[in-house]
Length: 315
Image (tube, rainbow, N blue to C red; front, side, top):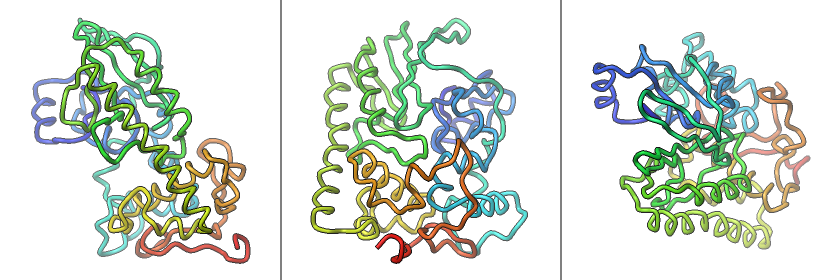
């Protein structure tokens, strides 16, 4: 089983039939959510995800929560998930839904990219394609001439996602060259409801990647018009504003904007507390309350409807 992220009823039925191994292409919610439906299976993750998949706090950090909100927010989130403190009332935000974290905490083994893997009588090639996540891999099944390309969801008009602490736009674009070189006749992704021929996939891949440059142009135009970071955030450049009351969505909106500004060389527009030079070694972020935060998620600071920052430092 690869990436049991949806269709829980179908997955539960498969679990009853017997599944020996669950492999995650990367650690994101929508790929690991129903790992827990397979209690008798080995859970196999990329070596870069072992820490995040073993601990809720490290999971949230890798998903950008600490860089945007600070470690106190992460610590309170984990305490709420563990039932140690009261979860803010009236929240529908999946940041506080323990269901989304049930698969975090169990890792049986790890794998590495760019090598083969035997699954019984089946053999697959693991192609490491970082960028969307530093761990993300595609899986090529030579016997079927089929490649599972994980989150190269080329049929979506939304385009690529790179809102994780470990995401990297340039790396994602370089990884696309590796994907183009895969000698598969058919391609299937995690979210596109279609199996594409090689010509179809390669055609849609170019359009998918073009969204990055389209976003760059839009952001450059707004910067030239004098917009600040806070004003750029108010534009809903990635997620529609109506979703910005969802805690993780607002974190990812913020991080994706930061990733574009870093990619284009506009680091000076990024709030000081979120700049790359302020980052600490892996999975550690200062407990200092930042002077920039996204607020509005109930009793403890979190993303929501209002973006705040210190005018004294960031002008």
